[in-house]
Each structure stands twice: as C-alpha cells, then as structure tokens.
Length: 440
Image (cartoon, rainbow, N blue to C red; front, side):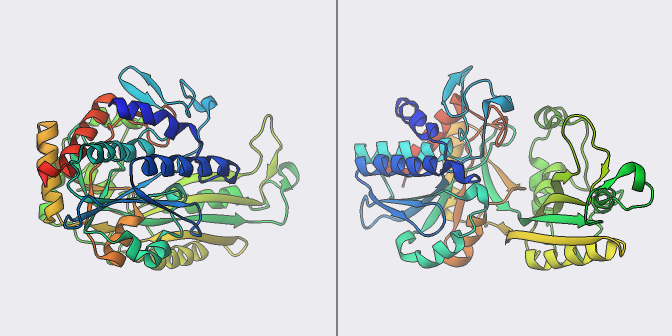
C-alpha cells in the first residue's frame, strides 16, 4: 500500500482526457510517466505510435519457461471539473474517509496501478511467477477505434498465454469474475423539419417541429413491456440458458441498494428477467443526449429546424451490430412523415462476448479471490462493453480473465469517483498471490 500511495498521485495528476484534443499534453505526460516507472523497474518498454494515442507495452521475462500474462489497462480518463460536484480537485489523488478520490481512481488508472505495483514488487523480490506484458492504451474512453488494427499488426509483440483485465466493480461487495460483456455502438440521429428556425407565433401549429418529431421517434423505441419495437431487432439474440439464469438469480440484489446507487425511484425491465439478466444479457437502446432549439436564459420562442439525439446501443452475443444499424436506419426512415428528413451516423460497432468459466486461469483466479476475500466469488455477465476482450478472443485466440477490483459505489464516470482503501488492499493481495511464484 505504501508504494501504491506513493505512485497514485503522479499517475492521476496528468489530465489524460482522450475525448478532448486540448488535453494532448496530459496524454504525453502520462505515457512518459508510465515509461519511467517500467524502465526504472527493469522492464523492456515500447511506446507504439500510429494508432491514435500512444500505447505503452512493457515486458518483463522472469523465466523463459514460465507462461506469459498480458495485462490490459487504459490510462485515458473521462473529463472532470470541480464545478461538476467534486468535493476536491479531480486531478489530485485525495485520501479521506478510507477512500481515494480522483478522476481515474478506478477507471482505469487506479485499477491497473494495482497490478503495476504488485508486479514491480514481485520483480524486486525475485518472486514473479509469470512472464508479464503490460499493454496500457489511451483511447478506451473514445471506443478504442484503432485497437483492432493494432492487435492485428502487433501479434508478435503481444504474444501471451492469457490476458488479465481489472476494469470494473465488485458485486454486492463480493469478489467477482466477469464472464461476458455486451457489444454495441453509438450513433447520432439528426431530425430536420425546415431550413431555418421559425417564429413560434407566426408558424406555430402549422409548421412541423424537429423537437416534436424527434421526441415521437424516441418515445416509440420501446413498448409498454420495455421491449424494443424495431422489427427484427431481437433476431439471433443469444439464448439465456438455465445455468446462466440460475447463476444470475444467485447474485444478491437489493432494490433499496439499487435505488441508492442509481438515484432512481423505480426499475424497468422486460417481464420475466431479473436485474442482472436484464442489464447484461438482454440488449438495450439508451438515449444519452438530446440537443434541440434554444436552452439558454430566457426564451427565444422559435420552432427548432433541427434536433439531434445521441443514442447508445448495447447488444448481446450473436447480434450483428452492422445489421442492427441498418434495422434502426430503416425503422426511423419508415417511421417519420414525408416532411421530415433524418440522418443516422453510427460510430465504432463491436461484438459482444461470453467467456468460458472452464479456463485454468479463471479457476486459479477463483481460488485466489476466495483466499483473499474469504468468500466465494460470483460469476457475472456485464452490461458494459470492453471491445478489446472480443479482439483478444477472436484475433489472438487467447483466454481473458476479467477480475474487477473496485467498490460498487465508486461513481465511475461521475463526480467523486473513488476507490476504497479496503478494495485497494484486497486488490493488491489478489494480484500478488495470483502472480507470485509460490502460487504458480
């Protein structure tokens, strides 16, 4: 923990925000910080350019006869500003109340730093039981658009027997092994009803409104049973087996805790699905942003000519993202009147995946987690997506072990993102036991 506390502030302070080009200096500084930490610890470091932000690959060979683990993480973070509700500077790692508060505390700097620290210490002690390659990228928050090509081009550099990822949260405060992720994509939907905004007194009641038309489109995406209405949308959706259903039903769920964490007063869902099945193994469409008309102080009283929605699709195994894009595009074009123009602009589709629990590495992670936490780990299917897991499986043919280390109330992507000291300590203990020579 002392080494972790020593390194965390330096990792956090550089604003490595990949979604805004204005923070490129923070990206460069973070890459240099990583390079320095690995170089100082005897790793061979390669900083790979040409695939958007630089990718840091750091390798250490403990013994040529050992198996090799590729540890994936990302150093880029979401934007953050103290005015958004932070209780302290988001780019200063602040310890209070048994937690570290900062942007990147758990997504993903703080979590990949757990493995960095434990493995550096194992190297120093001569007790590392695997050959290790770190691959830490800088575009996860923008969808890693060039990562697939990077993996295709650099297979030899990244060759390994398995992958370790820690980029998520515990479930019900219990150790967790993630066995699947949804695929998906984002898109921008633009609705246009006139060539210019129109005076609402002179034209209101006669001229169509892009805001109204967009609202009708969005409202029609779901029916009363919370099922998506796009024809053909559910074709090919992966079957939820009895084993998976029973596994999910065993995961502790508290309606009170759900409402506390989410800040909501209710819960939606299709009939017959529990929370974890609904959010991880059923597809969804979520409107994540709407822009229309004037929203400043006072009122402009104009009918907006154009309105835009940002929409996030979460898909499950065997749903083809490109096929869903076509289904959605056909749906909206057929749903609007002739006086409405629509434009659909999709971005970076990727497939969902399920992982086999039979892997020897997952079995070892299960045993190690049980020893560290003192309770049996949960197997969980995750509603979010990590495209690189699919790439590792499909392009490199190597299994992934996904072990989240963060506390459930970590506020990922929100103000006051945090990592509890207890979770850090357990994460360090897990990493040290898993990668230590005595455990191999």
